[in-house]
Length: 147
Image 1 (cartoon, one colour):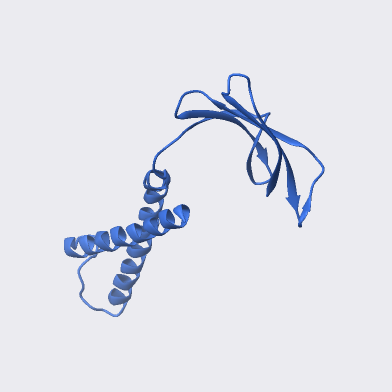
Image 2 (tube, rainbow, N blue to C red):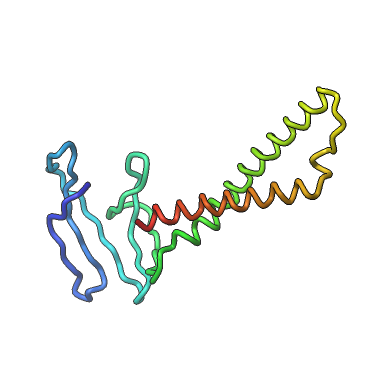
């Protein structure tokens, strides 16, 4: 957590300079940290980020990143792009493993059962379950991000 100590703008009003102190264990630190955010266009900003512990922090040193202001939360597009394929693959693998184990158990008992990889009805059921489970997980992630 941080506490801003001083805020100022450049003469052109395009750069915001902030000086802040960190708060650790309820005590305000004495070290001054600085950051600047530059307004490139009406909806595009840039800031420098540096590595800090296990993440990144805004600073006056580091790599410059450009951000775009949005009217709605970007969580839905990020989750659909990056997280959804991972969830789908994980759920697909879990369902396939469970069905395959059940198939092997039936074969071990000597029962005559159809191979699940060739059963189109079973495959469509698995796909439906994977899609509904993924949709539920995605919606939970987006809701928690937006709250």
